[in-house]
Length: 395
Image (tube, rainbow, N blue to C red; front, side):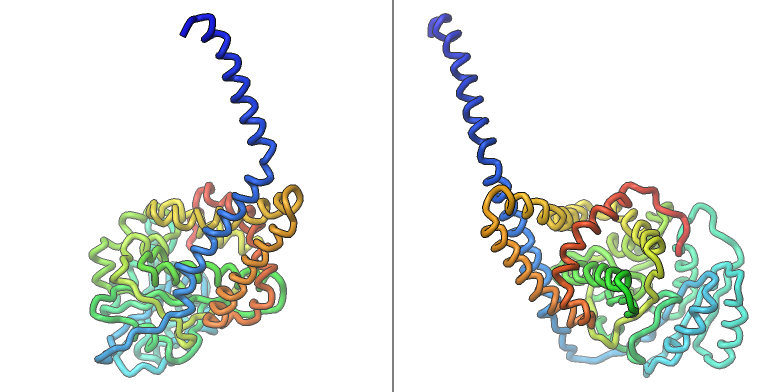
């Protein structure tokens, strides 16, 4: 090609590129709607592939029933009031096999020590462990929990918190019954008590939604966390993993980070029997709830990369849905946008509704669509906690 011709064609080429780009920009409402459809398809995949597993789950049949000796471990710091309320139902569990209840009194200044001494006279299987020194450079409750596990007699550990109560007198039985030959971890549901008010519903929905994910992902062979309010694992697994040594520098994470490290598709089971639930006191104020959630979410950055991607994608498409919906309804076609919204709410209503029934959160079912909208604001409010330094307090 002659230089003169090349020089003349170059501006023409740039002009065509600008025209094509301007044409693409002129159709931006269509691309927003396409993005809305893509986001909705991803959400349908999560609902269909992961979350329906919780709805359809049935516990495995055991050809040979076996009960294991169990060590229940509870860590407490200045929890005398909570222990008075919630420890007796744990001590009076109906369990035919040997078990013990260890309460690790972590440097309490209240009457915890004296309360446990009096209760020990009545219940011989109660074993208080009193700590009088702090563990330097090990923030959180990982040190007292480690002492409790090391002080225990039995292989199967069952963990809960001082402000938790079991849903029934068969809690220990139901949780240990999930153990099979290959099982090393059992994930339970740690619910919050029902109380009046909007904040309580928001807290219980967040707890339900978290459980929907970690229980469903575990059933799909991708376990990534458990909650210390209702969690069981083998003592041998704890020692093989060298306890919390790899996460001792991180405040929190004694439940979710530890499970994220040691759980596999074959060694993890779940229990969703209502008799195996635990109930704890919900936060009394938004500020208290904020502190609890920021402590939890600040540990999420230490999850395995595959789990971060799985959880991050789900959260991102959930957050993106309503802005894309609003733009599509205003600038593209409100009828198509309404159809997409209807599809989402029908799916959410079926999946969330059935899951709420299984986890005994029935009063949240009529509010599912409002709670779905609330999620957009929830992700904005709590996303900043991913970048905050974890607090050193373990409560």
